[in-house]
Amino acid sequence: MELALVIGVVVIALVFDYTNGFHDAANAIATSVSTRALTPRLALLMAAVMNFIGAHLGTSVASTVGKGIIAPPDGRHGLIIVGAALIGAIVWNLITWYFGLPSSSSHALIGGLIGSALAATEAVKWGGVVEKVVIPMVLSPVVGFFLGALIMIAILWIFRKANPHKAGKGFRYAQTLSAAGMALGHGLQDAQKTMGVIFLALVVGGYVPKDASIPEWVITASALAISLGTYAGGWRIMRTLGRRIIHLDPPQGFAAEAAAAGVLYTAAIGFGAPISTTHTITSAIMGVGATKRLSAVRWGIAGNIVTAWVLTIPAAAIVAAIGYFILNLVLG
Image 1 (tube, rainbow, N blue to C red):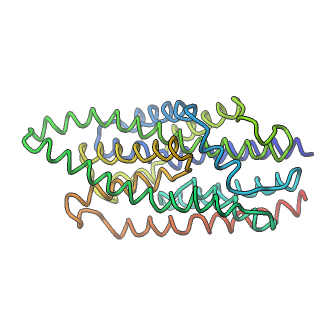
Image 2 (image 1 turned 60 degrees about the vertical axis):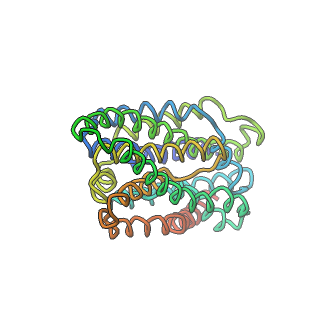
Image 3 (image 1 turned 30 degrees about the vertical axis):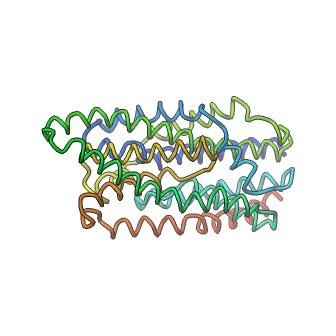
């Protein structure tokens, strides 16, 4: 029975990874598509490939998710907790995808883990949540906003005498690189979160020791699932990021992607912090837009997005808690 539960949790985790891919595909490519630097299908293919590569570049974020958020018991009860956490994250992903809101799949997963653990009256590692989730959740959009603005100001200064047509054409090519860098950072961040949850399920089920390294099949399966999800695309959210916040031109798109990629790499490699790619690119787009004029950013749309950010962890936690009670009633 426990083997079946482990397999079930792994399958659910890969479904979450797939929804993460199509939910967050817009993070990597919306700016490139909206500026016509890349065609939608080519951009999705490139993002899928770079997500796959990025997933193989480290496991520090996976360790944070797998070991630093909750401490579930071993056996069937622990697997029910992990399964309920994934259900909460998937449901919230689908709700925000339906309404076209770029919320954070990462924080949906964290909220799911917290909600299911609390419902089961198991320990939540609040110190780890504050240090690795809450503080980066607040800092990464702020850093993304100001870094995006600084890069955009530098571009405006350096190219102030350039021919606008030639500069725009050059930045379309440059956006191919910045979008690839953004997709690589997405794989480095988001695929690792699924790896962490699968590893947690294997530990709880007694199939790997707690101090073991993450198995290669877990890394490859997570990378493949998020890549397939990315290629499936997320057109609703892409429209919000690419056009509804601000109408981007190629230099602005390059600045936003470069800023967001820099923040993602620093958080993953330097701190092992599971930050939100959605928060980071969205705030970078706002920062870039604000350099033109504050009214260039559609702050009403931005406000709706921030509301979704604030609601993500508690909403996913509530859904996960309900999922726990149902699963525990059926399987407990």
